[in-house]
Image (cartoon, rainbow, N blue to C red; front, side, top):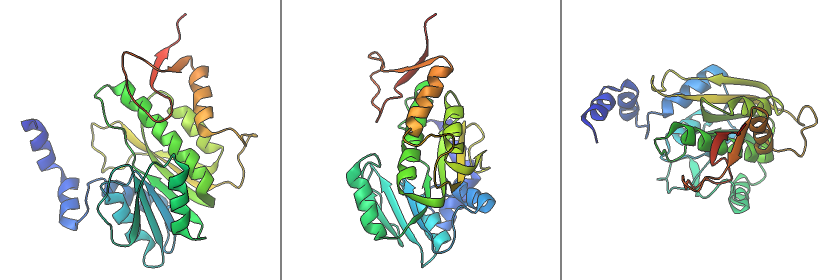
Amino acid sequence: MSKRWFQENRRDPWRREARSKGYRARSAYKLKQIQDKFRIMRKGDAVLDVGCHPGGWTQVVVEEVGFDGLVVGVDLLATSPVEGASIIIGDIGNTSTIDQISEILDGRTLNAVVSDISPKLTGRYDTDQAISLELSTLVMDTAMIILAPGGNFVTKIFQGTGIEGLMEAAKQRFSNVQRYAPTASRKASSETYLVCQNKLPWSKNKTNGVTAFQQVQQHLEKINVLVKNSEEDNIETKIGFKKMSKKKE
């Protein structure tokens, strides 16, 4: 751990605030600021938090939906229990995990899906951004399956190649789509959040049957970017945006 990293984190006001208020991560304030601006959750809502570890966002969701709400958190990593929430260890891309979520919902409709999901960073920005795009797209496709019409969706994305494709896919599925950078995000961070409100009962422009993942792939092809595996990188991801490189002329 570098001396510079230690000093920056010690001076971080959001980290100090989170610790003093009992939140498990400073990122809790990112969701609080998104909620204050967009009101994506209401009292009594059923909300799914994807990539919930260590539980800071889940804590905020529990506060926002109140006693009559229902909160489910899912992550590949074990997350300490959060009072007022059900926590699942699982892969959101697996049918078995969706079945577990449905069982907890017990007939209730899901009003919002929020996700602060992030890849295990490699230190190579293009690789990390590509994997982040993949994860966000996966979460969006899952949200479209289980989110009720009129529901809201929020996911973290890193600025870079392919974001416009994901934005376009979102606009065909929600009536209001915006990018928003909370002040609680670190100044040096390239992260932003895709805030999607009011899921449409059907997709625009005849996109039924075409997933967001497929649309983002089409977008990457359109802007002359290939999505392919790279043996030299040997980076494991869930479903395929492994490395992006320019097409050869």
